[in-house]
Length: 369
View: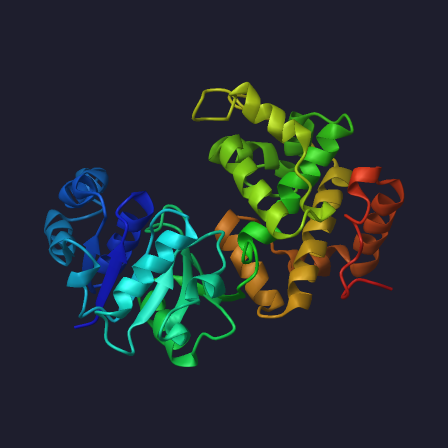
């Protein structure tokens, strides 16, 4: 029987274990913290109890799912795994040490995968005996619900490892999108303009409510500030700063002071009861100038990623739709808006850009005249 190993039993790791177990696969799970191991199955049972009470999950099916997950003391007990996925702390030295330990017990053809959202998969592979079997499998939270998984290959990842990871993850009901081992992968990279350009508009005097209302009218389920409030301004700031550093401070990833001030204020969004908008919910109001500006920068960022290789227009569109619930992906936006309208808006923005944003609106090669 195919066996999946999951290391790290926080919210994400436990969700990944549930995902594969629900697909009928055997799961070996562990965590470095004894209490996390001891409580894992009880936490999973509690999280699924509402589905049982509502009739969406039969009690017998819940018991079957839980029976497929075996909690073990550590990686040394995971030798029979075909695919081992880590969901531990985002520190590269911790992940490297874990993969080195797994290499000593797993079969030579077993696949090693990281659920990292921000670290280089290639850097994690350094020092491994068989780096060709390491890849990224970036699940989105909550893992059992979100359909998207980004499949990340570093330059040395082998085709057999990629195929096995894809096959097993698709069998668990996920849409697997290949993406390059670049900062932010697809979703976290291409989503930056959705927030960043909204913050640029805020800096210019627009209100958060106006900006979100325009995006709601354009078909988005949440506007940029509503999404920041949902996730947490502190989480958004950390992701923005991480990508800005990884991209050498390029102005496309500028960290706006309005976001820093919001975090400093402690009004982080829903989790603190107050944010850029929360608890306010703006009524949709059509302002296509706002929507066009944000969408033009989304298209441009996708164009720059495409130029770097390792993904496709369809892959980027699917990732943005599934990962962020966008109504359309960047290349669908380009088809609807037209190249000339998008390029014209970027050129106008470039001509008016303040000093700290110069170079932000330079067109990607696919758009350049």
